[in-house]
Length: 167
Image 1 (spheres, rainbow, N blue to C red):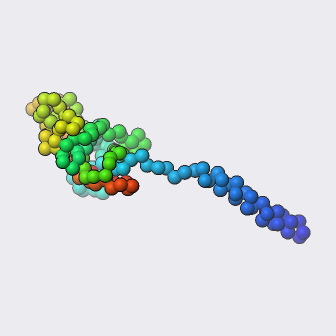
Image 2 (image 1 turned 90 degrees about the vertical axis):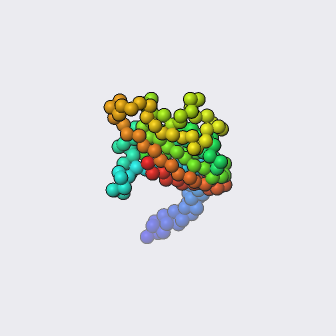
Image 3 (image 1 turned 135 degrees about the horizontal axis):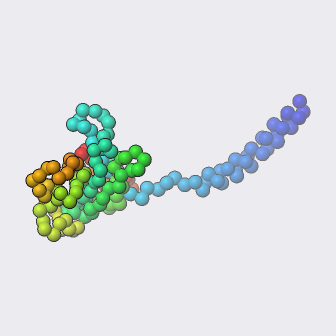
């Protein structure tokens, strides 16, 4: 009986020291800090018939175009597909303000997003200049359907804006 009492006393005395050493380790594990202000999640629901996001099944590549509040193109990126679940998510660093995004899925050399011969120019192209079209009249040259999405959103200082764009 005395042995059990001594064991319990030893554990009670050692417990604070053990916790102090563990808490020192835990203090070094920092919460991850997001290096983005806006997170855009792209979604495709087959003709709004199911609740499932089918985007991984129908889109093979995606470009996104970010416009400021005046409608001027400020950023153009290729969205990277998540290799684990096939989702299309974009994380952006933007100053506080209002923005809009236009996304184009499955664009290829057979399609274009502007009639401007110079193409899209950061700082000059206006949102109204965006025109998704095919470059030929023969639909047999591609098997992929073109998808597009549009959404306006705001970025607030010290917050992460979560945006869903339906394609």
